Image (cartoon, rainbow, N blue to C red; front, side, top):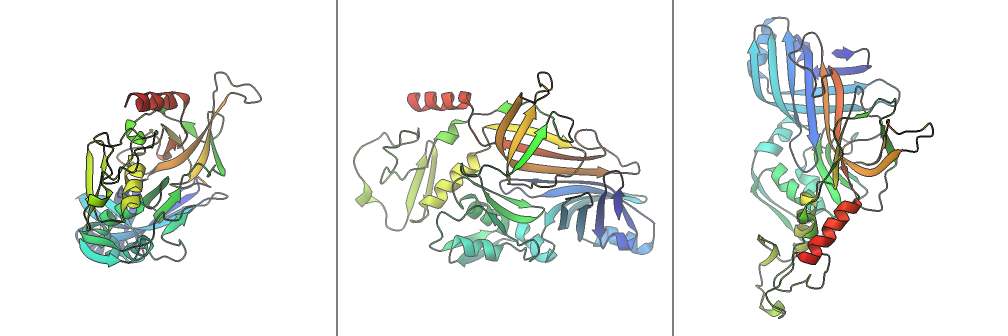
Length: 382
């Protein structure tokens, strides 16, 4: 077991450590939107024969991370090794992170195509996700119910991760999901969710902002799918993606067994009844925040995880008064996490130069005046 005494964090890797391996470096990451969580690891070993045999034969393991500070969090997940390099008594591993409950099923979720039918989107999530750990409550669904949960959904010769990326991406408008270290999470980010947790940077605290405050604008956020047969958004002044070909109602002409959705140059053909799922998927997958901020600390967060809505406050140290009046406040969602630990002469340090660090990416959920002005101009000129 690796231990960072200065930060009171314990890390174990079973059953590898029982075979004579010792963790020298661990680097893991998770992101919103269906990306595979993964990582890299450097290990040393004592040269015993069973350790040498493990290098070329073992494909899986379980990582446990425990923060022993007051209020600290813990993580426990499986890994499937996809690449390894070894020389003398050291080995480097690259892996994807999978549920620990059934390591074989967790691996198959990412690599094995299957065809199945489910009675609803809820049943699809429940049955396809391989994590069934009662302690973690997988899948974790917070502040959100599906927009539509009626009608069958089909997994057609595709991996579980590819299939659930579409189902969870279209779960509900203004929701996010991730294949995370805690398992599958689906969380709401709607305007009614204000965030119960504050993250403060710029003061004497642990968290510091490591990037400029980047404001982002994309006209994709103002385009919505519409059914060309019904032209169902022809009166939606907020959309710049509506039909301009004709005012005629073609509703009675549309096909019986398929329908279509259009957004600018995007054209999709799908079964009737999936309009809401398709619209949600488009809007949710294209949204990457109205701003983006990177923060870092040499400790683990205690009260927030990926997909949570938080209140981010940055104190301007150049202008701050004793009463801290110069505080920039922003409602954000935690969009990515990255954890790094190294010791005993490991080959590298973390992305920010520390041997122990946690980096997070926050997406701003509220528009700034400049993005509102850009949206208005686009709508008026579109």
